Image (cartoon, rainbow, N blue to C red; front, side, top):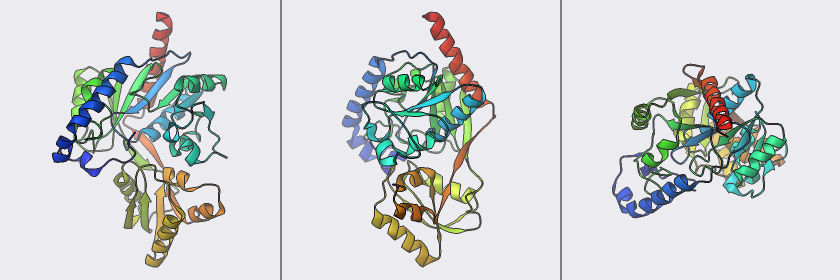
Length: 342
């Protein structure tokens, strides 16, 4: 999977998308075949998929966390299924946030593990069984919508309201993981995150199919200590611009910005440069929780660096706030129907 989305993907299709169209067509054909032929093995528990139509940056992880929090409040025992960093685990591994590092399990699983057990593995069927053995009774699949190795009782697609599906082309000419017309029949609902008109086409398609369209926005959590501070903001996520807006929403003044590739692992000289630049300019440092998870490798040096950084945490605000419960109840309804059908 592509880890860094080229900027031209998020603009009107130009000569680069046209030049790459034969490769995009081949990728689209593969995506369609995967969707049609996915094994979709049935698991002995409700399964909610939180997925993207495109490569990264839509806000999927905070959505998954919000759903797990709601599930727990409803008396369920949620667990997350994740492919992990690069899909490197062929056998399922239960994430230990106290000892595991992002280089081994991924940044997102470490954040998810704060809220519920996380099994990381390429083999999602085996991962699901591990979570069931650990007492989980409601599984949230973090990504995996296109591969569908296990049966979903509900598939929620998260779309960034500003960027939408970009230029509408599939990889490598655009950000889509498969053609929109091939993906949407497998979605049960769409959640737009943020403000903007980029997702309007997806919203119209969803509404015409009679499926729910929900909305939410990201909100910085209190306690980052960034309000009124002049900062050097840096991020290696799918959409760094979204983080820069979050810093400003939290009351920070951004004097310098540094954007890195999604899931970027920082070398020691990069951290030293960030610290020296901030000190020279009289600025403080600010980054995301995902970046902080990737920076910390257990060493005294990275711990000391992070002590100087404002880590801006976010959560998801739904409109209305009953949306997470609606989604979980719809997943449970799907699970009951599946059990009755045998």
